[in-house]
Length: 357
Ligand code: NAD
Image (cartoon, rainbow, N blue to C red):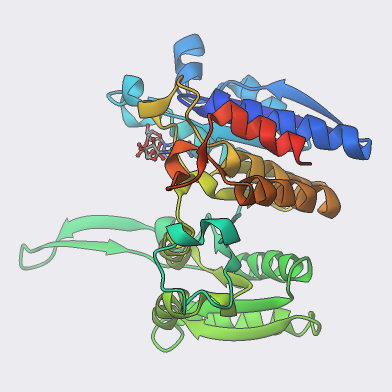
């Protein structure tokens, strides 16, 4: 298969970690007879330096023409004092909206050999931890009308609007059920239907969609209970689907239990198969250019691209197994280093993953 990939290396450690992920993609392509064509795209601080804007139109056009997009990270202290619309982070929002990405997917998986880095008790993770949070990304409270005003008594007051329509809910529900079919076939829908009207609509639509997926086990859970269950027994979850704000909070909670920010991939998906794949961490300016950055989150993001955009399940699993093997052999970058392990640089970690494919 031939696939085109737009590559946004970005700033800070971005070019280093993306470089390692590309080596892994090239190696997997060779092994399975696929060819990947990579096109560099300017976005973020480096784009501001070269063109004066964080996301030039040409970059958007290349992403729109590509089969998928791989992103490192953008931003850094050099651009911190620019005004809002010219900040590097604008590139991320611009890309999400230009590509129509409404679903954010964040897996949380605890690698056996990193169990010591997990802050939960052994008892809590005895059923393992391998879940995905599917978060609605462009609706709800973060996108509804808001204002701050003085009420009739002169008291400063603020209002944010939480709004969803059934179409927005239905399309994110389908992403979750389709994803569950590629995993352990279980969906938990998270809401606050005992209080919120939007949650009652959410629940109604989720139940309707669930009927079309009789092979997928389905349950509802209130968001407060979910927050508790994620630390009590995260092994009960396979795919969690929820609205924007609940997803924002729960996905940070779920990612922390895996130990290190350098390990967690993510993807954002829209209507078609094209997605934006990126690690959840930032550009880590404190370690940029020192070959210290852990490339695993980006390598696992590339694996997600193979699975969800290119339908290459075997190839994706192969990459994940190679990462697991390298960790089992005791190799660690600085961020996940512990006593008795062998510390390696970011590029050595990338090379080890390629070697173990
Ligand atoms: P950060 O995630 O960049 O770094 C937080 C800490 O984690 C740092 O100590 C860093 O060294 C470490 N770290 C992060 N990734 C690592 C890796 N792969 N390997 C080893 N250690 C790693 O968060 P921050 O410091 O708050 O932000 C730095 C810059 O990144 C800011 O300009 C911020 O706006 C930007 N940012 C970008 C994105 C993105 O591009 N998606 C996301 C978050 C932050």
